[in-house]
Image (cartoon, rainbow, N blue to C red; front, top):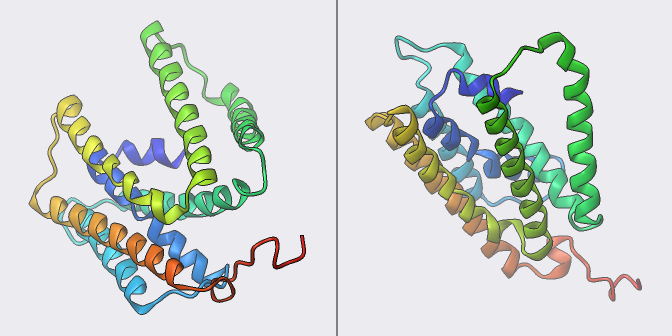
Length: 221
């Protein structure tokens, strides 16, 4: 819901760049809720990423509207989603996780449907079905990815979304981010990728006991 509302006010490229703050939010959640040790350099990347988001949004500019903060609210929700998906991917069958995630969304959407229903032309239905297919396949691929590789390894690939979203915004909506927006986007991508690299390096250096992870053999399982 936040995605649909936010995209009504924020261009696709800038919206996607702000969403790329999610890995940095996961770092904050790991430190505050999961007890993970976060180095000062990683905290610096979190700070730099949020500064980049402020450059993109520019709260002080003349035409700023508070609806521009919706992507940041979405980032908080996505951060919690990523953390939960990462934990479930290691203890649950991906088909089970995928099925119940979709089921809950379908049930909530069905309850709201009578209050917002409107007639749609066939080509809109086609686009809606296509969007559902892409979203469903993408989510399933995300679960499979988390089963086979650490989050730190996969996250840098996610930043390609910003490139494709900016390109799509230019081709479909004839919108190209201005210079300040491009600087903010670059800050977000740079800080996000650097934070992921630092996290991966730190996890490799840590021993099993220091990282909080003990292999099943050590636990007598």
